[in-house]
Image (cartoon, rainbow over all chains, first blue to last red; front, top):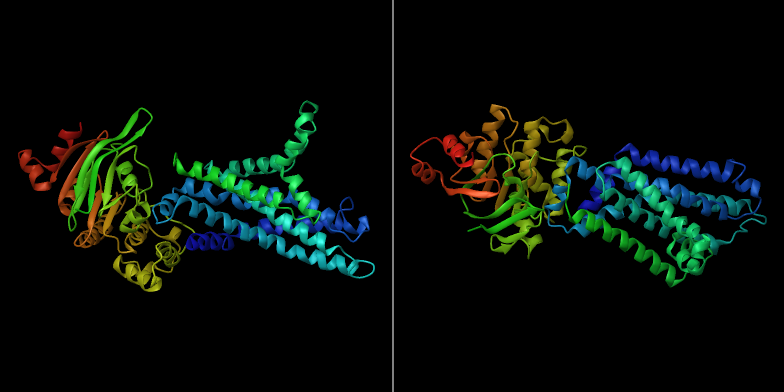
Length: 242
Length: 235
């Protein structure tokens, strides 16, 4: 399993695709958070990162879908999955290896944004006046959100040979799982079960962690979420109908 | 007996890709697996290597059932898939090292060194796989199949698309490997079967139509050439 993980990671790092997507992600983050007046922290005037943490999920939808789209789709297209499937590895090990390799990349893209925390704490008045607890909570939230989106991306990649289709499916599923349930719960017909529906969505749990409240219910939600989509991936891969 | 297949079948809905075939392969002998395109050769090989799950029936590789102990079986088999899929963006040594690691081999570097020499890749070992010619890709495919010193080798059309020089090289290599392993090889070239194989099985539309040694098969069909026998049995 370690061998597959290493191969996946190296093939990411030796292709320009990873650097370009992460670069664009960081560029977009920087522009939105520091320059564009509508969302800029400098215009906003408070030493908080809330704006950043509500933006990143939407950027993540594209970043993570782009990172994960090739994982199975490419193997299916090139017929190389047989090279992995006939080794002494279970399907689940292969899925986990690919999943973890994608997660490492997501962490790489998140790490540089820690600079924002330092900058803002320097800009605060007085210096260092920033709610560190909330920032830590939000980063944990982002990490869990990244896990959830990666599992969606891996699943989307396993159902098609075409990377573009995998990307499109992943972006839509991420968006729907993130804020779709929120929106559905506001339809008046579902008023009676709206609190249940909201709980299905990622946004509700992400925001609850971002508030700095670490609740086991949220942790259980994310673990179940990832297990569900990786389980679906196993089903899609197990049939070998390609 | 190192490969025992009993009533192995694979159905896709109504279509019976492989219909209850049984055969055996012995160590130290090369078994030729013949049949027209679409007869079910590759499907059978994919089931033996654990890539596809059989619909029914059993198969044993060196005493281990393919469905009960799939991971053990995969360690015992070296497999060269049809059309030799490889990771084109990897370097030859990098790829072979990766394969060796998936088997958890201890002396990875040394084994990579050995198989590179064995299949004659020394000159091309620092190239990217995507840059290699077809013959050398085929050698990389063979190298990844034998790197963990498997007892059973399953080669799906290992010589398709090679030039005559490469052909005789690869054949010599397979012959050599066949001395102490059980080799199952599928091919469409009848001269190859006569040059390489000790035993033959012929499969047509998922059904076994011949299963014996080459000499017995020829005797039974009154010395006609292998090509004629093949036509007679599969048309």
